[in-house]
Image 1 (spheres, one colour):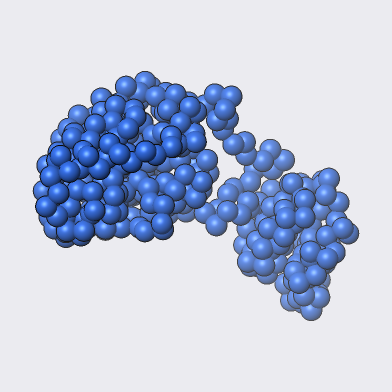
Image 2 (cartoon, rainbow, N blue to C red):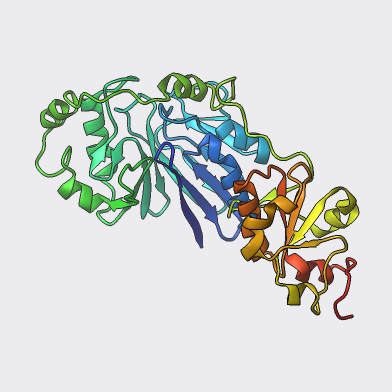
Length: 357
């Protein structure tokens, strides 16, 4: 079984793709974004996958790749085209090379035109292809800087992508209108730049007259991506909270484990966001916890100290996850959710006040 997820970075309108083998649990990540590494890492962990490689379709000009940072977190290999000019990669790809993850693989197809080192990645059964900035949905990448060549792009599209099966789904690196996927058949018929009967000269004329402004992050992104995302003063890695061994979920919630909370709760403030009947009900409550029902939390947040780390608690972890968001919105910096709530707290044998034995 293929595991497939399409992820989106709203700042750069970049799509990141996670592909995994359901049997071996090995996975690859295509076109990761530096600022989204925490999110992607959380998803990989929640799905029980082992990331073996990050793949960049090219040296991006609009965002910094997360390849280097993901390697530090997971040990994954950095993979990019040998023609990219990038330094620090573990694997430099040539046209026709395969990247395996378990029993599955993608094949690299050279698709220059946007940059010299552009590559598209085609799934083993040719049912899906990841086209980077070569072919977009009813469009294509620009060719006016960074070794851009409209005639080379036209040939890449027609020789490397339009020769795939008509039903092959195409997933681009970007879309600025919220579109998510297209197909070979659709783009051959409807792409206004390179589809239908449009010739190479038609395409070159179109592309040479786009007159687009350069990407806002060009001066930061290109130098960083030529080092595979190694950070400098302008793209410093996000730091994880250091007041407790927290874990970020794919939902974006920082969680704390019951055993750590039990051992260190004297230095924390615990807010229980259940209703009073639950607080005093069969599950009991944690010693020292302050009861503020979720519906009243925003109005009563001033009753808590914003200078002290805060752990939110509820029955199973759902309401308290929302509580962490509320507290962060009103200025609390060190906030976490008790993973599994009181159900897990009791199941692991931690002490409670009240409740049923």
